[in-house]
Amino acid sequence: MNAPSTRGLRPRVASRSIALRLGLLLTLVLAIAVAAVVFATFRYGRSAADQAFDRLLTGAALQIGERVSVVDGKPVVDVPLSAFELLALARDDRIFYRVIGPHGKTLTGYDDLPLPPTAPAGASPRIYETPYRDTRVRAIALSRDLAERSLSGRVEIIVAHTMLARTALAREIAMPAIAGIALASLAILALTLLAMRYALRPLRRIERAMLARDPRDLTPFHPDAPREVATLVDAINRFMGRLDRRLDTMERFVADAAHQMRTPVTALRAQSELAIEETDPERLRALQGRIRSRAIGISRLMDQLLSHALVTHRVETVELAALDLRRVAIEAEREIRSAGVAQAELLHLDLSEDPVIAAGDAFSLREAAKNLIANALRYGAPPITLRVEHSKDHASIVVHDEGGGFDLPADEVGTRFARHENTPESAGLGLAIVREVVESHQGELTVTRPVEGGFAIGILLPALDEERMA
Image (cartoon, rainbow, N blue to C red; front, side, top):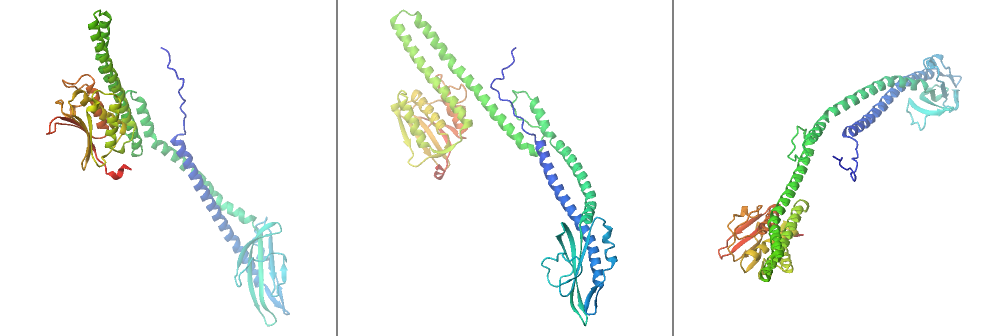
């Protein structure tokens, strides 16, 4: 057996899996969270280091401030070495200081050491960072008031040092915490991926169950699935239901076509064979008439089969819309007359003066009305009336004639191959089309014998308000 051809089949494009997408998303979220925690941890370490070294700066400035005195009316500063002993423990850092007298002159230290920027009056101590001598330093400024008889005023003491040691201390504080956070993050990510793999296991179970099903099995699928997947399973079941209905419709159409066509085609063939062998002109003319009549019947049957197929297709594909059944009746009557149906001049319209609004497919309803009219013209008795009526809850299209009708109950009219004694081969198919249209519109097929006599068959649909016509 030859392998099936794959020409024209598009290769299936494998998209990224849900697990991969969730993994990437969780990794991104976790990375952002870790980055935020690392930043906060480093800020905390830097804040702790600043507090520690700022205390040393404050202590050094206070010790220098205590050694400011007035001698012979002049401020004198005796800078103690102990003020810088603790700061000197940071061997790679440099220390700077400056003492400014009451008149704004530098008494000792580095004359170009920057002052605090926009220092508010009386604010002490003042801690600030500033660039100095190609590096960045952190400084503290303290003020001391001199109130001697020979001299009074305010002395400014500034002590600064570079920030290598405090940066190193901040890293020493933060790095162990950052390492712990990184390890915890990796563990959390690994556990999350394992949990996600476990959570997605029902999807793989559904996949295996679907692949194990017989391709011809379109019955509803009821796996043991979590609620989050229930909607997907329900969508699959609805799709398989539509597919099952489509296949059933195709099978029924093929069966209907075979059943309806077999007898007339066989009869046509037999009559044509008789005509070939017939030598009597009169009998040959009669056979030709029967062949012509049979061919017309087959043509009419083919039209009905095609109409049936089209109506069946529209049941699943066309959305119902609000329409006026009077227009449907007018168009059906016009098409019956233009098709040259025998005795079409016997048809009369009886339309309501007000709009008769219902939800429906105009084409399908028109085909149903045409089949009701054609059956009445062919098998009923004149006069034949096409009525469009409405009540509070219902809208209807009814065909009434003066014939005897048939005795089938309404729920059996239009079933497959159903016929009564007065109905030839194609009448059952016409009413089957009407039945399918009625069911697709959630309507009702009515069969009545009015008190005034005759026979009436029609379509009853739920009515809509006139405002919904728009």
